[in-house]
Each structure stands twice: as C-alpha cells, then as structure tokens.
Length: 291
Image 1 (cartoon, rainbow, N blue to C red):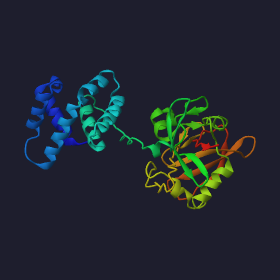
Image 2: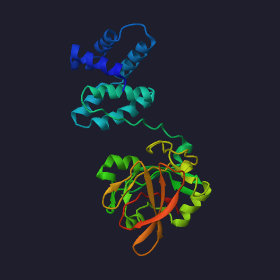
Image 3: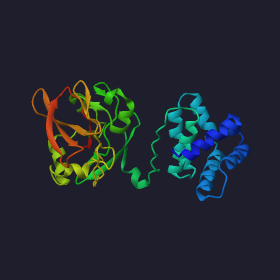
Image 4: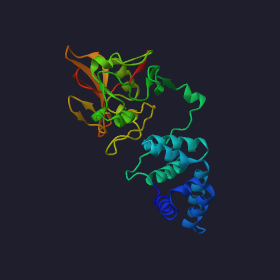
C-alpha cells in the first residue's frame, strides 16, 4: 500500500469530512492542498487520485463498505478501473488507500487478470455446473486443466475449511469423490496419464521444477512453469490439514488396493515429482484431464 496516498486521504478526511469525497471539485482542491509541490512523484499520485475520483470510484466503494462487502467491492473496483484504462498497479494502490479509510484491517487485493484474447479464450473451460472458468493447457498430446479443481460438493473441503484457500489452491477431495467430480468432457487422470505428463516434462527427477507455478510455493520453492501446468501446493488432509504452500498431492484414478489409491506429489524443496499412495478417505487436490 502506498503510504503517501493513505496519509493524504486520511488528512483530507480529517480536515474536510467525509462529504468532501462526494464533491469532485472540492476533492481535487483538497488533493492539491495535501500534496503540494512540483515533485514528479507527487504530481503522478495527485493525477491518479483525481482520475480515480472522476470515475466515481469513491461512491461505489462507500456503497460496498456500507453493505459490509468491502473486499468484494474492492475487487470489483480494481477491475472497473482497469477497464477504464487505469494501470492495474495504480488501481490497486488507490483502492487500497480508499479502503484504509473505512477498515483497520489491511485489504489484500489480487491484481486482476487482463481480458483474455480470442486465442486465450480458446484456452479456457467454463464448468457448466457453477460457471467457474479454468485455464487449460495442451502438454504433448494431453489437454489438462491448468488449475486445481474448485467444485463445491459433498466429499470435498477447503483447506482449514477456509474458502479463501480454495480460491487459490482449489478444494480437497476424497478419492471416491475425486473420481466423479470432474465436469463433462473431463476425467481424473490415472497413474499412467500422470506418468505421461511427468515423462514429457523430463521424468520423475526434474518434472516438478518445470510443472510447478512461478509463485505460490513457500521457501523459494517456485518452479519455472515451463509448460503452463501451474502446479500449486494445496496440501492434504487425513483428518487434520497439513502442508499447504509446501506440498501438492493430486489424486490419480488408479487404485493401490481396496483401501488405498495412488497420488502424484510435488514439494517446495526438490525438483522431483513422484507417486505414492494414501487412504481413499484422505483428501487431496484434483487436476482434470480432457477425455
């Protein structure tokens, strides 16, 4: 968060009261009073604030705050500002600054993804069951979802029962659910399909580095994401939740025996990607592969 912007807005609010934000002309004048001088950075910040107010961002944010939906309101506003041509980083700074006037909790806002091109739209899949959009990627002769599945159904949980974790890492599923949770046209990959992917990425010893996402792994454990698979460490659960950020475990459709099934794993420390087996009652991530 840009401290200069936050302090300026708080100063404006203290000197002029909240209502000043509803008067664009007075607000412009107040900004110029609070951020005087000819310094290039000051001018840049002042212009961004004025541009944002002219888009009516403050009134929309205040409405969202009044409904106790400040996070949702901020997320929408960042996208609105970007659509209006304001740089994404600028939009993030300004909206976080407005939010600071209404809440003591720091608001974390994800930078919105740019609007997809036609080519990128062809590399997406919309789950008809809930409308969620997943990136997809072709790797060798296989087509994979490039995100962990996040379909809410019985037999699944969010890590730590926190929906925010599911937004980033997807949900965790028991094995029986995992086998039937993929949307139409997709399925849970079996052990051989996972191995085909890993072999294409260089084999068990090095595939993890190339398949892991460029960010989202703890302790400098990020990968190169060479093929766009973007593996993320959703952890797992055997009754308690463990290892989110450190380890990723993905179910395969292949059984080890009547009680256990195979998974594929990657971790923050090594470059490898190996298989193992868990109880079918444990909860792991799901990546779907196209039929």
